[in-house]
Length: 489
Image: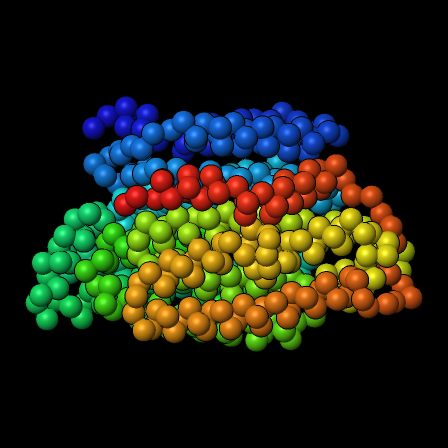
């Protein structure tokens, strides 16, 4: 087993190369006034090349099965890279205005986090998975604290890293239980040995403890109830671009990894973890929706929205089938463009001229009162994104919800149907609170609306990509067909 094994890890190798190139550019352009623009364009170009490269990369294995790049994993990496590309583009105006001296560090941290998510999605061993999770989590904490002179940013990062530390410890504890029960960490071997040892009652409690602890650790990453308490404060404190990145890209990688591990590794214990999923899904969707209604701060509002969306994503896991995997990837793809469109608008409003000196209030929902009067294009694009998140036809969000409902219903049990029914009811509730923002923009009147302003070119590009995805992903059936073909276990 030599260094030639790395040739099977082409996506990760290219991403490491991109990290090195961005680091060199950051070092060489220290005194350049155009440093941020150059590095942003360079990072964006590298991510585009990565997406193109990923479309041609075949399935591969390395290091005796520790690294397994299936076709589904490669497609998921494309989706994650697309989300990262949108974040990089939308972050440029903020970096230019707020933290110009540190802009290179931002791109390095984003790429490092993406590398960790790549390792998570392609792991074939619990140790590899844990290393990927930590590689993604530690730079993410740095990103949350990137506004280092702002109290909320430091507070959000502290809550994130402390909770991440405890959840990682719980997960590692669960992995140790699994290893103690079956004597291996390789996914395929674990599944085979669980099937053998599960017939002995003396082994079953330790396996179930390992499963529960592992699920609890990954539930933090997905911000599922009851592992969600860090989410609102972290989303509010983090820079808006980082909040968007945390809400979509990080969540997508964790959801994919959880489904692969539950379906492939813990398949013999399906009778136990499916009921755990039922409870978590109902709690996540219902509690998040109820708390979202009460929010007046937009980033906290989107935090509870993301908790609810995580519950919907988990509906695809219930099916434990090819349809479920395709539905999960499709949901994450649609969620990336819709959610990033919302955060791009929030970022644009934050960067707008502020003649009334509303410092610290530009993320309040009341700031959007009468936005349609002064900035109709932004209000319209925000409305499209919110309609997609709510699942209103004909936008892509409606199709993504339909597919995860269909995947869950295919399971065929009474409890699966019951969970789908609860999710349908909560979809109506979510429509109400998403429309609160639309009401503020179009119906509410104020004597001091935001002034008319022109957004940066990078912001317009990010909004164009997101809006195109919202409009086309739902009507281009070939996209779901491609994801379904790539989702075979």
